[in-house]
Amino acid sequence: MTNLDLAKYKSLYLKTAREHLIDLKKNLFQLNQNPTDQQLIYEVFRLFHSLKSQNYFMGFEKTANFCKALESFFRAIKEGKRNYDPTKSQVIQDTFTKLENSLANIEKDNTEIDLSQDIINLEEKLGVNMSS
Image (cartoon, rainbow, N blue to C red; front, top):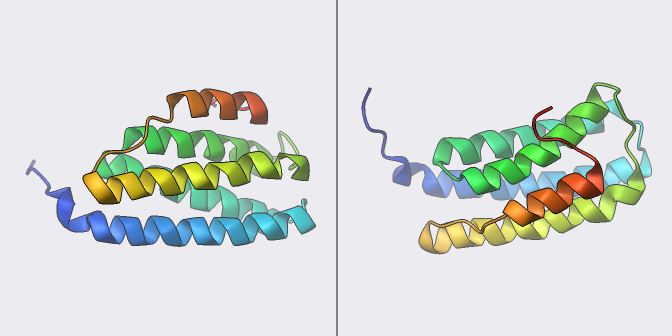
């Protein structure tokens, strides 16, 4: 297997991640208006899944694990194991700032923010388990 130089993909990664965040904000707003819309639930799940995957691919595990907690939350909703509760919206919106800050650090010096405690807090507030 060849050693893949991921540095050449960094600008595309950052551009795509930021586009996903814009889409997530828009979809979350719409989901709060219609919390049973299965298409919006799927789309939010898909966007968090995509963010998680691209962070793992680029080697940013802390950010990927943070996205994984959010993906798990929306997977449970998508699978009908729980309902979306718009009162959780602020908790989710707060994650956007953390993700934006991590992306800014990655862009600036190729390091991500340590989100370990944020993941624990997020799991507690949303009632998710990353292993599910």
